[in-house]
Picture 1 (cartoon, each protein chain N blue to C red):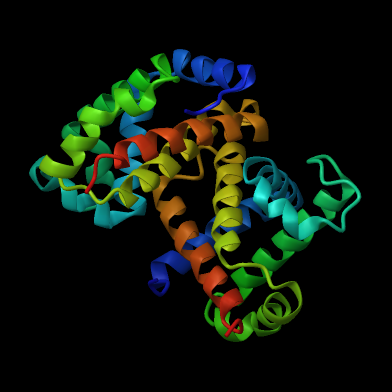
Picture 2: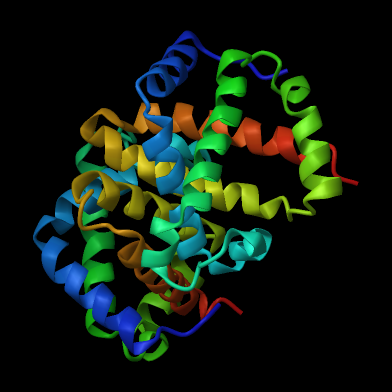
Length: 144
Length: 147
C-alpha cells in the first residue's frame, strides 16, 4: 500500500527497541496462535511431527520468524533490497501464499497487544501495521 | 446455521459479560479510525478527527463505540440466530449508511486487539479462535443484505 514515513520508521524502531528482548516469546506465541486460530496455515507444516502450540518446532519457527522481523527493522530504509534473499526463499522454495503474511502479521500484533498493552498504542499499532505490510510486500516481491 | 461448541459459547458469554462497553467500544472504534484512517469517511459529522489525540478524545466517537458494542451484545445473546438478529442492521448499513462491508473486518480486527490487551494472558489461542469466529459471523451477517 503506502510507503513508510519518517515518523512511521521512528515509531517502529523505538517500539522494537522496547520489545525485541522478548522477540522469541512474541514469535513463538504468534506462530502458535496462527496455527490455532487459522488451522489452514497448518498445511505448510505437515512435515512437523508435532504441530501443537507448545511443540519445539513451533518455538524454533517463531524464533526464526521474529529474527527476520528484527532484521527487517534494521533494513527499514530498503526492505525490498534488504529482504531479497528471503523473498527468493519464500517464492521459489517455500511458496507460501502471500495471504498468509497478513494472517501472521495480525497474530504478531495480537501478541504485542497482550504483552505490551500500554506501549501498543493506536499510533504504534498503525506504524507496526504499515511496517508488517511493507515487509509482507517485500517478501512477495520475487513471486512473479 | 453456525455450529458452536460449548467452549465457544461459554467463552463468548464470558468475555462480553466481563467487558466494560464504555471502555472497550470507544477504544476499538478510535483505534480503527487511527489505524485505518479511510474509515473516517463515514464519520464526517463527528467533528474533530484530525489526529489520534482528537479521535481518542472525541465524545461522538466514544458514544458510537459504545453503541456498536451494544449491537454486538445482541449477537452474544442470540448466537444461534445471528443472521436474523443482524438483518435489519445489515439493511441499514447498506442502504442508508452505505458502508463498504470490508470495513466491518477492519473494526473487528481492532476490537480483537483491544480485547487481547484487556485480557492479557487469558486471551489464549483457543479464546482468540472463538472470539474471531464470533466476530466473523457478525461480519458475515452484517454483509448479508447488501446487493
